[in-house]
Length: 279
Image 1 (cartoon, rainbow, N blue to C red):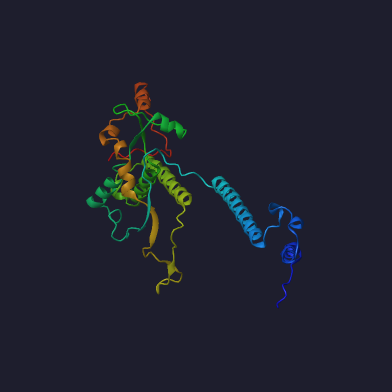
Image 2 (image 1 turned 90 degrees about the horizontal axis):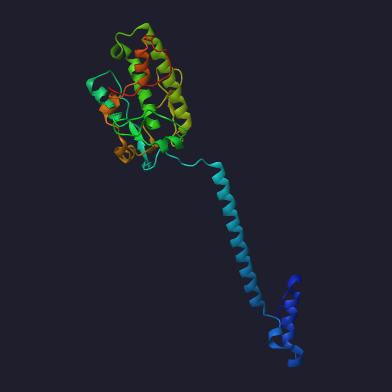
């Protein structure tokens, strides 16, 4: 008959099992409720305790992890309520066939006009206050004039395109105009630099290739999927806030009216101001 090896911590259990085989009177065993529980039931209770401890440990760990994530993450805040910000993977447009590039044509100008046609929106005083900002009032339809940040960036891209074809877009530029435009161009370049760093596209890799005519590696411009905002959904979601083009055109600067009344004819100093699209 095989000998059961006793574990030190469970020795009392084996002792109890062995004692049950010996002849004892019912008085020696004591009342039934005081008898030693079987090893099988003991293991059942031990297992339940272990499960309870695991559940408690998991709950505490998840609470700590969630608290850490909440502290380290920035809330996803949008300019105003109701914007549909959804993401999808898509290929960037092929710049060779892009309607937004190349030599200026009526078609490329129309493409840029359509792209920026929905940029001016109406916001409330409360929404401006939530951002700690102020803006120009819209006396015709109420509210205040604003752009989504992405349209500031697109405006800058358009300005850089026009500057690269300045003989076409600015044919009669004066020295003062040139100085003002250069400040505008520097503003746009730095704004786009900040935007690229701010959003930091980490969804794709830019890779390189060899060209037999070039001594150094060249950027491979083949198209790969990028994680992008669904542009159509975003534009649809803020359509009810659009400010009609004519309402923007009708805005008059009261400061200039006051200066004109005072006889001040000094040219405006160059600055980084960005004008509203009115073309």
